[in-house]
Length: 80
Ligand SMILES: [Zn+2]
Image (cartoon, rainbow, N blue to C red; front, side, top):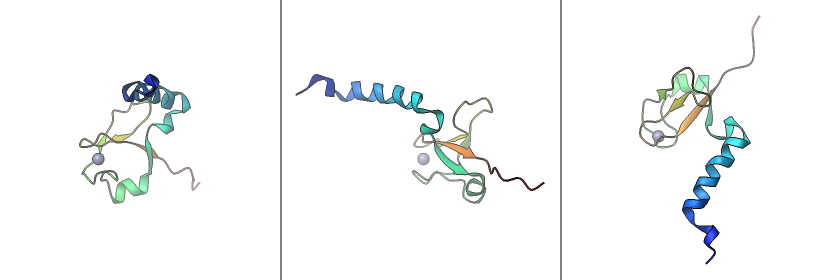
């Protein structure tokens, strides 16, 4: 048994690694249209999703039941 395979150790390292990969790696990305039309947690089906405070650096919504985090992907196209 390798001691560096300890689950608690891997979990802690994985969390830090995810941060360095980039903020979008930490949250699932939903489109504005999807949220407007559905607004439930795709992970567990709970509703509604809770909006984070505006100063949240990563995610826009989170699920109060399973704690999954979601980033709202704004539509980039502009009709000007
Ligand atoms: Zn959920």
